Image (cartoon, rainbow, N blue to C red; front, side):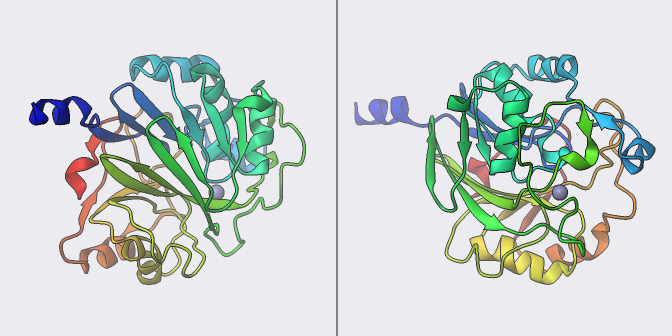
Length: 287
Ligand SMILES: [Zn+2]
């Protein structure tokens, strides 16, 4: 009888699926949330360099959500407001009944996507947010790169697309810890860090951004080692100027995986996953 009631109350298995860049879906049974959803991936490098106009491709977003059987999300969480993390966030939240949570700049992307203010949460550092069976904490971090993550600054007013690539200003960068009865995941979307910020936290899995890594060893010390993770899922290595339904290719120039892989390889017992698109990874098995 005890065994029966224990199994009846056991949490659904938590899985993590990756959709290019740092876009991930965390799902446990009917409960799900997404971090940095980005399906639109405006094509081509020249439009980006010319700072053309971009907009979320709502038909494409619907197609991906339907394909993945995502009808409801508790929340859409955003690490920072650059377009490759946040362009689609407001639309995904609107289409799935989700709360959008992130910086004040991310909130303005949500407003520009027609999301009601009651469904927007401006994250405060370390505050525990409850979304269904998930507890979420936004932890202050830093953007990678010598420029400090250009375009820097805030999105100060509702951002209604089409807007320029560079209108998607960073708005501050978060590392996001998601805890569930079945396991915990740290989403670290940009390869900067605030020294010591993750010390004393725990995550079973780190979703690690691999773009613009400066010093791989200190990056891993401040993220993977700090939270004692046994599994790393490598993200943000793909060329996001190509569509998701084309074969994924590594991003030239800004991603140099060799030093990061070498530093990961020095850590005995660490499981490193280069994820396949949309293929669920069990988080529970990662402990
Ligand atoms: Zn960025």
